[in-house]
Length: 310
Image (cartoon, rainbow, N blue to C red; front, side, top):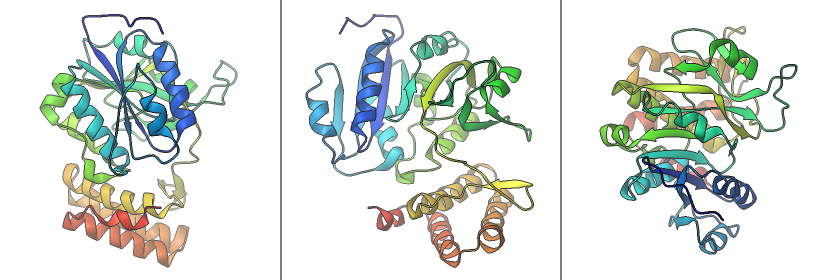
């Protein structure tokens, strides 16, 4: 591997991984091709697929294996703090299943003097992404303060090149040392789902300059539709077949809304959940699971998800 470029700004890439060795290997190979990255840190969430052994054999990757699976939230909490301790000026945060384009980081760095927390669009890895066949966004972007949702690269192009006050953490986003020192680390106790939103809302509350850069791209597997239509198509609900994900979503989303938006938006989320599992997709089991997660969130209990781990 060629020697890394030494720049005035020290960019450290932080990758959180769990039991996806093949994807991790592909991502590390790509990061090695990005000279602006000064160091690659990998946080292994106690993988059991040989990830730990492979990481110890990579001389140019610095890694640590957590004693247990702490989820994405615990992984990014750990990794971001670690990067700060190792002298990062900017931290490039990503899961193991994303693959940034070769020019993704250079494009993002063009905006380093004007932003504190910013990132790329995340596009479906198997889409062509040309003028006739725009790529779908894996994570659609709702423009702040509007009902407009961008679902393809063509939609983004019509509103770009820079989308203010919105970003999709933690998929190839950059965060500055100054912002981390002001707002702290992601909430490790969230485990999964909502930790990224909480960090974004906390950053906004602290006056962070936030944006998505249309010209920067991370390729990512499709994750299915993130919003199931409900209430006669007037809104959507983030339904998932995973009990673990749903429990964490119900708990963490209610906490986020109550903390940052107030009691009425939190109550609206409870009503949406009731409507969805009473009328849109009736399920007594999901209503009980939702109630358990929401009650735990209101009590400040962030241990209940452990019973759904496999």
